[in-house]
Image (cartoon, rainbow, N blue to C red; front, side):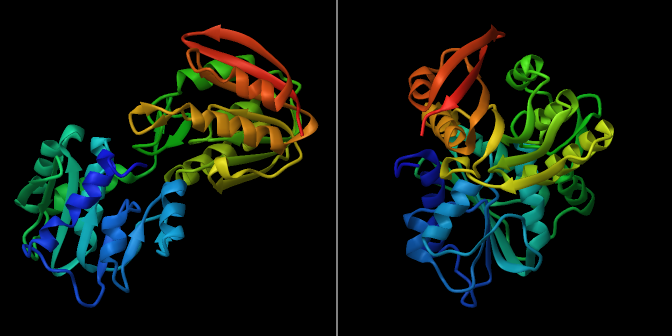
Length: 352
């Protein structure tokens, strides 16, 4: 993430009211930062005792490399200052605001920062509604807003918004999911296209890269009776529990013994080896911009993770040029189908 990105601007702006003297850092380190991101502003102002939460593995790893201790889920406890870097998904951000208000101690404050181009006015209005008003300033093309000390949230609204982070069902109740996950409220079209052409004779050890809430893995269990184990790799920790639920349900419906694991993992750092088949619907965005390097990293990880006889099945937007990377990583590459704006590719004989 570049220093000039909107996300870095939001992190920089988050500390402005403390630098200006409008707010004071707690001397005892009683600070919780929800959806923390690494950056100069954070490293420059670090204090002992801070608690940083980040559920996205690449961002959590970046914080860890800078020497911070990071937790994937919102921890227990109360804090004098709770900072929030909201997401673009409104209901997910409302849940974050509710979690912040639920974890702020007596006399404490909640502070949030949002880029103007990413719904800052809406986010400010939401926290004001929950907390009974906020103070706001603008800096770095962002809005920073905070509650009055000791603000007490309206309990009914607090409970309602806390519930927005709960597991719910989608696709006519077939799958557990969670707001804010990729395609959280539907079966993603690209994944559905891939699952429709997966061969029924996939067998042995299989991996699903970037598994989300586990739709593709569940389809593998349902369609491929000779699969004996299935490992799901997913970078977003909030997806792990829904994926476990969905995978357990799929195995139970199959009536077979299938060994499974669901891992919080950044696929770009590599995966286990020896897989007989790998399926993937790789991410292709970093923020709002296309980032084909993510898909290329998935392809490289799959090639290294497959056994010599293994097969890689992936789906991608039709316009994304992955063929050169596929050709460099596999001896045989074929486009199986092009439909609904997507292409499904099978790659075999990984190059070592």
